[in-house]
Image (cartoon, rainbow, N blue to C red; front, top):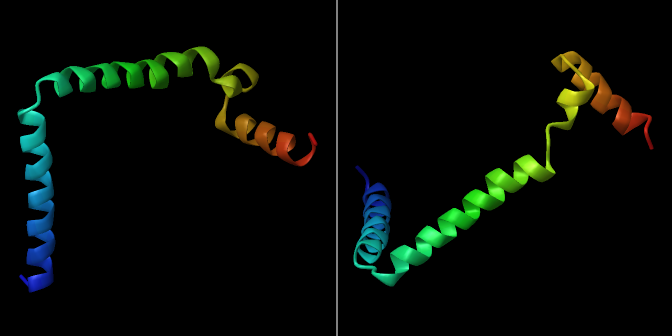
Length: 78
């Protein structure tokens, strides 16, 4: 291996161990990360299902129909 590759590998190894050791020694931080994870789950999964339904599936059945519908909306539906 060249020196540059060894330095990159050493750098990423040090970054990994920095975060790994930091998370392992946390006490209150683990609870905070759990809360952050739950909030992200709620934001990205539940709210997406509620506020962003699959609109094209209600209008079209096949991929070709979906393509034509989107093209029509973009080009003609100004």
